[in-house]
Image 1 (spheres, rainbow, N blue to C red):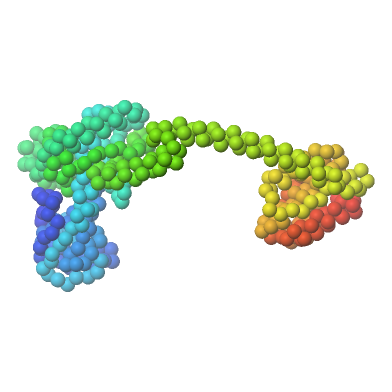
Image 2 (image 1 turned 60 degrees about the vertical axis):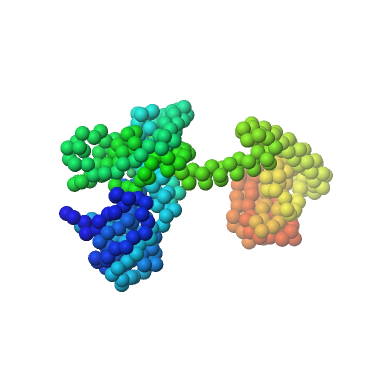
Length: 408
Ligand SMILES: [Zn+2]
C-alpha cells in the first residue's frame, strides 16, 4: 500500500516551510483536515507528539496518520478551500521533539550498556518525557554512570544517520529495538553508538541534543520509569531550580550545599519550640482553670463552672474542661461563640450526671442537633451563635442540672 502523502521529514528534519498540493479535503474528529501530496509535518506516532504550525495561515492543531491508507491528515482549526498551500511548522516545538527523541535513543542505549536495562516503552507529552525500563533497584552511581555515558556521546558530536536499508542490509544490522512496522523499515544510527528502528524526527549530530539529565525515577512493578530532559528544556529546568536554590540559600544565609543541614536544624528547632509552646499553653490553661474554679456556683455537693467565650481554640477549651473536671464534684459547662459555636460539657468522675443528655438541652437553645459524647464528656454545636446565645444555652444546661432530672 502506498501512502498518498510523501513524508519529506524522513530525509530532512530541518525544513520547516514548504509548498504542496491538496489531494483531499476531509475531516478528523469533527475538525476539517487536509491530505497533501507531500509534507514535512510529523504525524503523532512512535511516542512522539505531532508537529503543529500553519497551513496558509490556518492553525494546524494536530497531525495524524489515516489507518486505511497511511495518508497524513493535517487537522485544521477551521476549514480551508485552497488547492495549493504553504506549510509552516512550529520551530520551537519541532526542535524540542528532535532533541528529546534523539536524546531518548542515546539514553536507552546507555541504560543498556551501563545497567543492562532494556527500554520497554517511551512516552512524550506536554512537559514530560519518560522511558520505562525493565529493571528495578538502581543505585545513584548507576544513574550517574548512565548520564555520563549519554552526555559523552552528546559531546562527541557524532553524526546521526537516518535511512531505509535494503532487506539484506537490514538483516545484518544489530538493532536495539526491532521494528514494529511492516514493509520498509527506517533505521537511525547515532554515530555508531546506537542503531535502532524509528520513524521520528532526529537531530543531524548528537551535539544538538544538548544536556541530557535524568530528573527522577520511580519504580512501577517490575519496571522503572525515568523522567528526563534534553537541550532547551534542560536549560530552563536548571535555571528554575537554580533560582529556587539561590533564594533558599539567601533566605537561610548559607551556601547552597548547606541547605539540607540548615533545614534539618530549623525542623529540630521548630519541634522543640512546639513542645515548649505546648507546655506554656498548658500552664496558662491550668491557671485559667484555677481562676474559673473560684467562680463556681454550688448545688448540693456539686460545683458548677459555666463560662461562655469567643475567639478561643477549641482544643484549649477541651483542655480547660479536663483541668476543671479533674477536681472532684466539679461540672464544667464551657461554650464557644462564633460561626461554628461549640459547647463542651464535662464532669468529674465522682459526679453522677449524664453530660450527653445535658448537652442536648443546651444544643436545643442553639437550634443544633450536632453533638454527643459519653456521660462524662460531651461536645457539640457547629452552628453560628452569638455570645449571649451561648450564655443562654449554658444557663439552660445549669437549670437542668439544678432541676435534677439529668442524673446518669
Ligand atoms: Zn527516534
